[in-house]
Image (cartoon, rainbow, N blue to C red; front, side, top):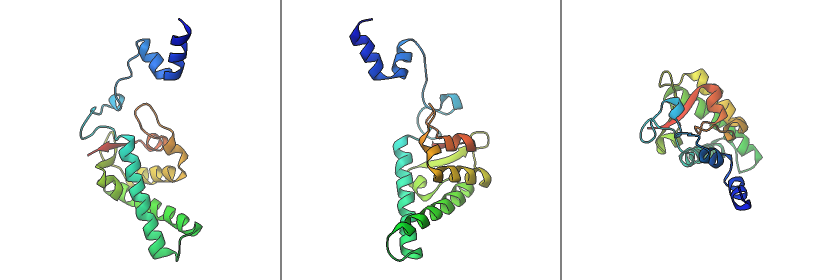
Length: 155
């Protein structure tokens, strides 16, 4: 192996090096038994972030308009509380928040296809902490989804 190959494998990362060695990772959601494309497939990161931005904006508007007078630190805190309540209630009952519905996403449990309120409460609490949502596995599931036993899919 010359220097160019060594540097190229280092720059492309461990996944590219493993694929070059013959390891087959498959597509996102394959290990979970989900389809590669279309309804029921794993939600892509762009859609997930877009839905989160819509939901957070909606919660900021509620906190700014109904709870606090003026924008400040208290507005952000109230918005987080509104986000927690909205997400826990809507995901726990119908499986999606307004932002998720707008982007065509739904939260489900793989075994049942629905989410019970306790799983939604755990998932939302971990999402509000933020760190678990930033740690993803190879299928694109955040740690908050893995711990709650849920997956976010396209509808």
